[in-house]
Amino acid sequence: MKRIRKILVLLLILGLTSCNTAVKEKEESTQVEDQEIEEQQGQEEQEVSDESEKEEIEITDQNDRKVKVKVPVERIVCLQHHSFDILTQLGVEDKIVATEDKLEGNLGDYITDLVPEVKDMPRAGTLAEPNVEMVAEQKPDLVLVAAQANPDAIAQLEELGIPTLVITLRGEGAQEEAQNPRLSDADSAYTEGLKWVVETFGKLTNTEERAEKLWNFCMESRAMVDENVDEIPDDERVRVFIANEEDQTYGDDKYVGVQLLRAGAVNVASKDIQGYKPYNMEQLAAWNPDVIIVQDRYPEVYERIISDPQYEALKAVQEGKVIVAPYWTKPWGNPDTDSVALGELWLAHQFYPEKIDRETVEKRAKEFYQEFYNAEFTGQVE
Image: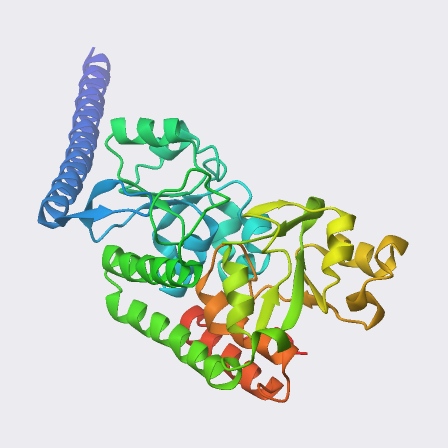
């Protein structure tokens, strides 16, 4: 009987101990959960506090739309490739939370070396068709879209309360055809448009001092070019054709025409083609350019021009003046900062090496990459 009592007492003690342990574990679990809830609430309150402390500014974007943005911005969905590059040069690529589907093709594979994180970055649509749902999932406080972005998508983003800026890289406001603008003064429009982007991005990301340095570098390079080739008479300028994929070229009122004029040349297609459009062999034969330039992102275009018999009668082909433009020169329809800082200088060197030497171009390229990409310049200056 005593033995049974001892067993019962022991079981009772064990049961009470187990119960106490369970209660204690539950209390500890509840404390952890409460702590996590408090931390989450604290974080949300901090975010609300941070948001309330931000200054709201109104910006008129490059399509004449008035947009209110709280600065500094922290989460950017960047669906415009020039903008991705400029934000990287400003040192705020870590604020980009999503980008466009074909960034590497539109901008160049070099961006994956400079910003390795881009390989795993969410993609939220194309230049023309932003994916509104994907954009919204990123919870951005700013979206940057291209001139050709679908107006319906922009309107949807506005309805969701997401600030969205249209970036065209040019002045003179909205155009009837995004890719084929008609400008009263292309040089002024693209210069002022690019300057606006650099300064506005600086203001939005609290990098105004760096933005000023970036723009000053661009203007310093341009001044070097002007000093050497600005006075070349029109009838002595090198006549240049820009060959792109799908038999298209840049005509009048595209930035590359400005870039060529600044570098002491002239775009032979500018009198017959407006904007970015196809050309035919009859037109090219009539233009018969001194130099043909192909961007390095279109190697198949270069190979076709130097090997296809239909091009062999052209002066540029016969004289070996089919030139590949490296990625860092950007002879594009719209300017990037390195188009001005490096591209205009490189083109002037190609056309007038006695006026702008290779060493000058290479020195500027190294300085630009070190200063604004924090990276070594690995390109070649021929």
